Length: 406
Image (cartoon, rainbow, N blue to C red; front, side, top):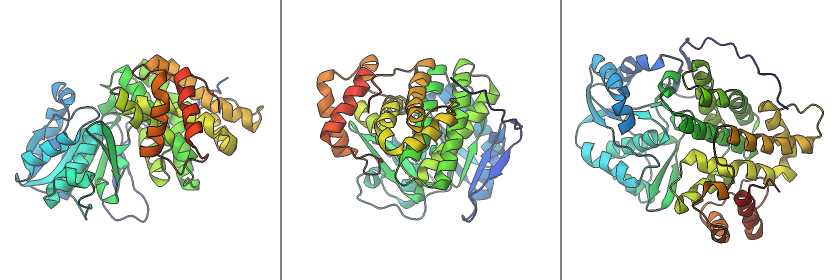
């Protein structure tokens, strides 16, 4: 049973800044419907001259790229465009941006798109600033330095949280690589829920589950702390209340507003703690079948929650309540189990697969190898419950069958 919906009652048309106390300026997240209108004036506070706008072909086709190009030009910038970032991008994309613009006199980089666009913008901005090919950072040949080109990020999806993350993810061959370094934070992030209205239902669902994965994994991680938990619980509460609505009606600005906020604060929370094995699942599945990151995380999420119940039942009981489940008359253990069941049901309701068998691309005979790969390449020592080889195989078997066993 779900509790009555909470009334958040905020003015979604008010654009506001929020900043982390104690951090050096600009340290700004500009949030609200219409916030993107400020991009020209904000960019002008950081640089003058040539701006490189990075995006994707879909956003170019629907006019978003031209809209933002016009705002930058009105602020006095000469604007170059790279709108060829693909979903789940490969290192060759970052190299292409670098090779095309390393000698072009770029003064500021603007990334407008989903996590793939924002990640490639971060990586290319750092490389162009220092004259270093992006692949050298990914391979560890060169360490990031202070700092890249001035950077503004504006998400058009509600899930990755890359606009407030020090991490980028890139595919090298068939392997997912990621790098975490504070020099990859943006200078200014502009989160405008209106930019997310164009997302189709399946992308809304998968990116929304990515946000929930950040929040729930961030709470489960051993590095979680009271501050990260507050942010993660807020993200869970918002996504639990609004993801279904956003999938059902993409033009519902209230739902888009709160999902955008859920995405941003969930990543802020997880950035203070870390991920667990749901993210590892996403990286492994991609080796068997091209998979959107949010779908990969979602396929692992309820199962790692169920696996962790024996050691963090109290925390998962709080997750169940944040998701809107009625837990007052349940034991802590039953409420924790309800949290995993709630995520499983949410995935079904928004049209996502709930098992590896349903999703396809990986056979039952692959499970042992997939489990071993996960532990070898994407181990999570800060997952609250240790996982050895036999436990990992059982975990993958549960995901394959769709069984929420521990």
